[in-house]
Length: 175
Image (cartoon, rainbow, N blue to C red; front, side):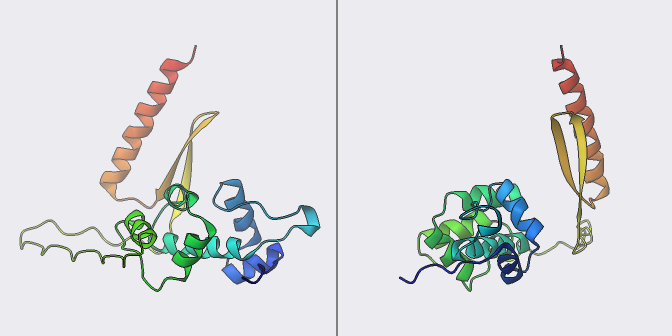
C-alpha cells in the first residue's frame, strides 16, 4: 500500500473545500484526529481528507455535528474511506442506517416514498432555507443550549418553553 500523502493545513482545507478554521474546529470537537507533528511541521494525511469528505456528505444529509461525531467516531480509516468514496447517497432520514449498511457491505436501502397526503390534511410547512444559523442560549455560565434557526412557529414556542424549564431547573440546583 502506498504511503499516505502529507498535506499542510491549507492544502487539506482546499482539497476538502473547507476553511482552515473549520479543520481546527473539527479537531477540537473530536471529529478529526490531530495532525502529525505540531506547529509549522504539522501535516495531515489522506485519512483526514476522507473524514472531512464524509463529514461534509453527512452534513448534506442534514445531520448535526453531534450525530456525525457519534456515527463516525467508531469507524476505522478504511471504513471512513469507503463511506467517503461511496456513490450511494445516505437516506435523508437516517445516516446511522446508511453507515450500518455500508459497514455490513450491504447496499443502503433507499428511504421509502412518503405516504400520500389526504385531501383534507394540513398543509406541509415551507421548506427550510438552504442556510441556517445557530443561536447560542446561555443557561448558566457552564451550560449552553444551541438552536438552529429558523424554526417554525410551533417549534419556537416549544424552544421558548424548553429554555424556561431548563433555567428554572438549573436555578433549583444552585446552592
